[in-house]
Length: 301
Ligand code: ADP
Image (tube, rainbow, N blue to C red; front, side, top):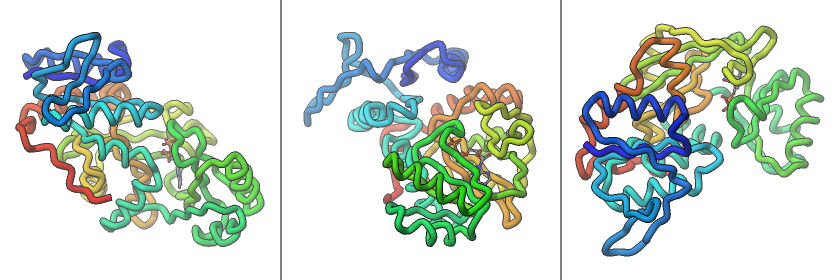
């Protein structure tokens, strides 16, 4: 097959591994900086042009769209869809996964476990908002934050009020969430490919830190999931319309609850922690599924 990896940098670990795995399995692979693609949007012969040449004859696309480039990145993925090329994750699924609120609204419709979450526009409604999640302690999140930045634990009601007012004063969209204390600063990253969890790890936050993000000093180790956790992760990826997804769960007193569903999950941490050839499994999935007409997104929101 001829595979394109849409990525800003060939040297990124995940990009490199996907390239290696594709080549090992006998495919031709090209890494394409999607920010340098331009498009010819016509009814009869839609095209994508890169470095002066049209990108043609690809059998499959692996999008690795950076969080800060969702708009242009998903436009490039969409153009491949228009050209009827198989995409490992669709443009719509990537776009919806980037908005935490939209993600939670979609998951809730499927009856998937979530922390109690509140959302409001006006600071006039702060008291009510805090009450919806059962009061302090609570977690406040910037809607489009990543790597744990913009995730704040407010231990008291007055701290919660100040932080909410400050974020809203900057015109940032935030959500508030029940604090899952019993998770003990740990979360589970479940790497889903197709309808299977192919690797899973636990991330534990640094001492005194409730956020488990590796970027915030957390450490990772392989973990065996319970059948309930496994099926929750698979259902969450499916609800979002993602075929390749990093689903983050917390272990709460009322079962697994979803933190987020990531459409370009990193490979480095999970391959190191588990020893699983995650890149190879993604390419194997593409080999099985990259048939024309197999790429329809069936999620409605
Ligand atoms: P990001 O997308 O920036 O990583 P998350 O929403 O995943 O933001 O939050 C970062 C980390 O903070 C999570 O992995 C988890 O460890 C912790 N965390 C987030 N929300 C909660 C919560 N409601 N209760 C307990 N811990 C939380």
